[in-house]
Image 1 (cartoon, rainbow, N blue to C red):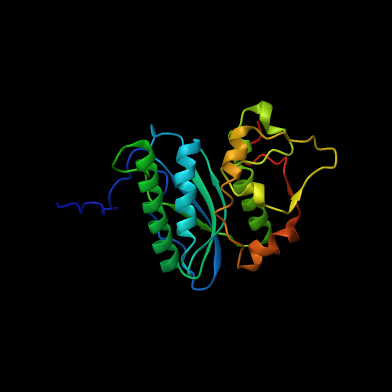
Image 2: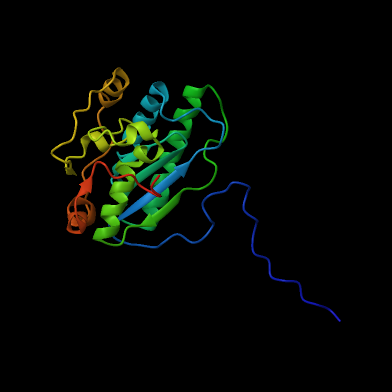
Length: 224
């Protein structure tokens, strides 16, 4: 008696692959999304001054497309958090793939290497409402606090120079917040300016504020 073999389910995921190979959400109007890109283990930190300068240029170039807007961003040691807008699924795919190529070339050039940079395809998630938009903004803008040493997490006026946080103007800062004295690295990186552009969607322009303010003290993710 012949037993039918189980249906094939495609290629097994690569070890360490982060983004599942599932269909991406489909949309056909300007939509806000949270995009995450992760580099291979063992590569140089993305937050070094020389590397970040090259990354900053790539982010600025990626924002020159008419069908893509990089609204906020955070560059961490091994990954990128990007808050973006795009008018369609196809436009988003082309724009993020093009941006990933620019970023990979910049990272390879500064590291004097060649080959693959990103460990898997990008992860994207549609932002669905005011609370989701507020929470995503907090996650992206304050992401460095999640990875910082505990001694720096509560320096209230500290914002991450490897992100768009220093240019965000709608923080809810407590009146008793101690002053932050920037170091030389902070001044060098913030002198580059921001690679972000103003939002087009209502959610990222002002809709998020209906869910409440964004506190500079907020630490994304599980609390330490």
